Image 1 (tube, rainbow, N blue to C red):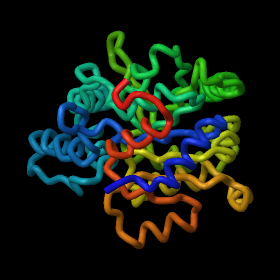
Image 2: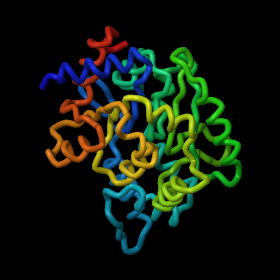
Image 3: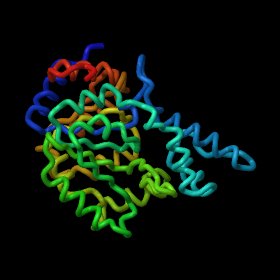
Length: 292
C-alpha cells in the first residue's frame, strides 16, 4: 500500500520548517528482511516471564504480555541488577545496527528526537552529529532537580547541527561494577513516574514540552492503544493549546477504525503503512538516501 502522498508532503514541510519531532517506540528497530533488529515488547515480556517462571514454585506468572508487571515480579524475586542484566541480554543493542528508519531520521535536519526505548541505537545513528542525550529518571530525589535543570539547559537551544535526544523511560548504560542503568520498567516505576506528571515535581523539562506543543509529532514504532503511552501523551501536551497545535501523525499497519477515529479527535492522523514502507516514502520525499 502506497503511503498517502498528501500526508508525507505535510511531514516534509514540517521537517523543512524545523517543527517535526520523531517520537520513537520499540518497533522503530523491528526486524525485517535483511535486518536483524530488536524484539518488540511482547517478545521481551514472554522471555522474561519464562526466565522468572524457572525461579518460582509453583511457576505461576501474571499476564505474560504485561512487561511492567512481569518486571516487578522479576525484580522482587532476583533484585534490580539482575532484572537489568536480563533485559540487556533480551535487547542486545550492542550486537545490532540502527534500523534504516533511524538512519533516515538521523539524516534529516531535526533538532529533537524523543524515545521511550532503552537501547542506544538512536545515539549510534546520530553519532556523526554529536547529539546531546538527556535521560529522564524517576530517581529524582537524589538529584532530580539537578537532572531537570541539566535537561532544561540542554533543551533550551537544540539545533539541527547538534540535536537533542530525550529518553523518557531511561537508558542502558555500560556498567562500572553493579549495573545501575536508570530504567522506568516495573509497574512501580510507571506508577511513580505517571504520578509525578501532575505534580510540582513534574519530571518533563518545560522547554521540551513547550517544543512538543508547537511541533508536528511523528509517532513511529508504537501501538497507540497502550494506556501508559496515552497518559504520557496527554500529560506532555497542554489541552489549552489543542486548537492551535499542529497536526501529528502515527504510522500503523491496518489499524482498527476505532483507533483511527479516536486519535483523529486528538489531531493525530493515522498513516496506514508498514514502518519501512513509510521510511522509504519519507526518504524519497525529503530527498535523502533510503539507506544512508
